[in-house]
Amino acid sequence: MTLAAGVQAQAEPQRLLVIKHGALGDFVQALGPMQAIREAHPQAHITLLTTAPYAELGRRSGFFDDVWVDTRPRWFSLGQWLALRRKLISGRFGRIYDLQTSGRSSRYFYLLPTPRPEWSGIGLGRSHPHANERRNLMHTLDRQAEQLRMAGISRVPPPDLSWADADIGRYRLEPRFALLVPGGSAHRPEKRWPAEKYATLARALSADGIQPVLIGTKAEAELIAAIKAAAPKAADLLGRTSFFDLAALARHAVVAVGNDTGPMHLFAVAGAPCLVLFSAASDPTLCAPRGQQVRVIRSAKLEEVSVEEVLGALALINQL
Image (cartoon, rainbow, N blue to C red):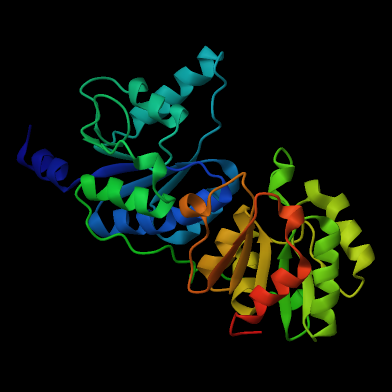
């Protein structure tokens, strides 16, 4: 090797990979660990491997030099797995931070040839394993902070979305508005407060001079339409909001009320005072949104939570 070639090889930055697929709430909560990785490796070339919905968030965060979309190979598709293997090998990564720590992402370790890169995650053979038998009993933020400490990163800041912004003037909302998130997983209806109670809440907010703003995806069109029909003063933003719009809306909202679902994590991190409704289907000690002002109501059955109880909780939030 010539001297010039040796100098060039020494100057090549360390190459790192961060794996985080989603869902929305999980991705938002991983923003603090992502920032910590960037701050711990300021000169490194860092690539994010994520799924398509979160690629733009990754690009605009400023934490990554490159963003790869993981198409998540089907288990029976050898060709797709081989293509992913070639892609991972091409990255020439010296260290991989698996923030997903799922069965799928953990298997990616075995796609890489030996000697394998340093790996922060779970499973046998990792150079920096998160070796805590109680890791699944920890809140997501605490679990990932501990994982990074075991990989040598001691400072993990809370998630931050101050960089995510958009012009929300096009929605022509009233000066005082509240964000309502009545949806959530279609496969977990027990995690949803009844639509008729959201409608009653929306009417109560309207009577108090606060415009209800309905947030949801196209999959929740029927639900949103039913609430809008019962509370006609509500603004319907169904399917009209990007993640960046949601962050901007959160900064101006009086409050956000919703089920245990991804947008509530985003609202809490972006700065909205939040009231989150939990049923027995999920445990807020493990996955509740965290932010400056987050309150939780939990009931074994959400249909047993009254509108009066929700209004009482909202009255304790300073902005109302």
